Image (cartoon, rainbow, N blue to C red; front, side, top):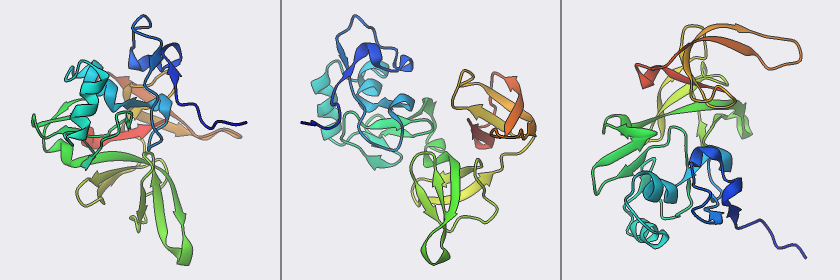
Length: 216
């Protein structure tokens, strides 16, 4: 008889970017269902225990979360295996700290960059877009298309600006063997039977996060 989804994850099968010691135990935390794929996220328990060192044990992480000290994109999260992903803002009001891959200022913690996966029309012709983190936003700007990047205000959940996926813009690759690299789009070419390809001039530093476009 079927028993449903697996509730465990062996440490050897965990994503490499979690950087878990294979001799540290047999199991790894299995991410909960959420806005990011399990292979593209980092559970909150790993952020608090393994990265920030604010907790030493599993139980200490639960104690911190149940006191409602951790916010992701401005919302309190108490699930120890909640999947935080690329461009998510993890805030700790108790210590006045904000993180997005690295420590950020309070001004940067107020917004988030989201890649647009698709733009569609719903019932009664209402336009809406789907973002990479599972958000659905109605009545977007008509100029926003798939693969563009929107700047989202986390307090009002409204689009304040958007960046087109065009030649000359700064991009950060979020998938494949070039994951994490930052560059400038040199040209775009469309090949028959394949997805459109873009060629970039790679650079190691992105000077402004407001001008970055996600690309995969």
